[in-house]
Amino acid sequence: MNRPDPDRELLRRARRTLAVRHTVVIAVILLAVGAVALYVVSREERAALTASIRQTAATEEDVVDPPAGSWIFRLDESGALTATEDAPPGFPDRAAIDRVRAGGPAEQTQTDDYLVVTRRHGTATVQVVGSLAAGQAETRRLLAALGSAELLGLAGAVLAGWQLARRATAPLGDALARQRRFVADASHELRTPIAQLHTRAQLLEHDLRAGAAAADMAPDISRLVAGTRQLGEIVEDLLLSTHLTDRTETGAEVDLGVLADSVLAGFRERARAEQIELELRTDPERPSITYGREAALRRVLTALVDNALSHTPHGGHIGVELDRLDAPPRVRLIVRDDGTGFDPADAKRLFDRFARGHDDHRRFGLGLALAREVVTGHGGTIEAHNRPGGGAVFTIRLPAGA
Image (cartoon, rainbow, N blue to C red; front, top):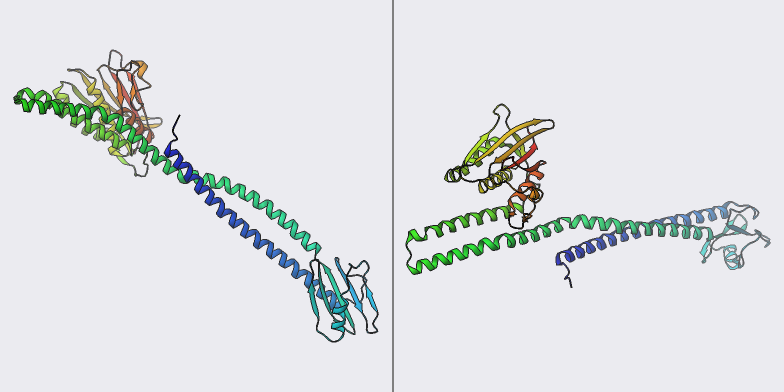
C-alpha cells in the first residue's frame, strides 16, 4: 500500500485553504454589493411611488384618470364619495378620510400591498391608494438577477481562488521539490564516498596502532586525501544544484577566454603529474564575451575539464577552444580530449542526474547534469560527441555579449 506523500498533502491543504478563503472573501463582497444594490433600488422605487401618490393627491381634480397602479377616492364637501373604477377591496379607508375631513393632518399609511395617502384638497378630502405590486415584482426580478450574478460570481471566485492558490503555493511546491531532490541527491552521492573514507581512516588507525612506518602508510594517506577532495567536489555540486533555479541574481559580463585560462591554470599541476597536455585556443581579435553568472559558468568548465582529465590516459591531450558564431550571435566553447570517450548508446544519458551507462557499470553522477542545467539557464545549449579515433567532444553555445 502506497503511503501518501506528506509534501503533496501539505500543498493540497494549503491550496484548499487559500482557495476557500479567497472564495469566502469574494462571496461576502458580492453579497454586500448585492444587498446594497437591492436596498438602494427598493428605496428609490418606494420614494418614487410615494412622490407620485402625494403629487396625485395634491393636484388631481377628479378620479377618472389616476396614474397606473393607483386609485383615487374623493369625498366632497357635501359628503358625496366618488372613486376610481376597479378599486381594490378594503378601500377607501373611511376612518382616515373622516379624521382628515374633521381637520386632522394629512396621513400616510402602508399595508403589505398598498401605500395610502389621505389629505385635504380644497374643500374636498382626497385619498390616493398606490399598489406596491409593481415595485415588489421589480424587486423580485432584481433579486433573481442578483442571485444569478452572485452564483456566477461565486463560480468565478472558486476558479479564480483555485488558480491564485496554485500560483501562491507554487514557490512552496518548488521549495519542497528542491528540498526533496537535495536530500535524495545528498543521500545518493554521499553514502559511498563517506563509507570509503571511513574504511580508509579505520585502516590507517589500524596501521598506526600496529606501528607501521610512514612510508608504508603513504599510499593509504594519498587515497584518503584524494577521497576527501572528491567528497568536497560532490558537496560543491550538491550545493550548486540548490541554486540553479534561482534567477534573481543579475547577470554580468563574462569573458570566457579569461575564465577558461583561469580554470586550466587550476588543473595544470594535476595535468603535469599525469603527463597530459592542456591547450587553450582563443581568437584575440574577437573576445568570447557572454552574460551570466561567472561562478556557475566556471563550475561548468571545471566539470568538463575534470571529466576530460579523468578519462584521458597519460601522455594525452585536452584542448579548450573558443570562438564566435555570427548567425545567430553565439559564443562557442569546445572541450576536446583523446581519452576513452563514451559509448554512443550513452550519449542521451550523459546529462541525466545519477545516470548509469547502458552496461550499468559507468556512473555519470551530478557534474554533467549540473553543467546542462547551468548552460540551459543561461539560454545556451550543450552537446556531447565521440571523436573519430577516440576521445570526447563537448560543445557549449551561449548568447554572445557585446
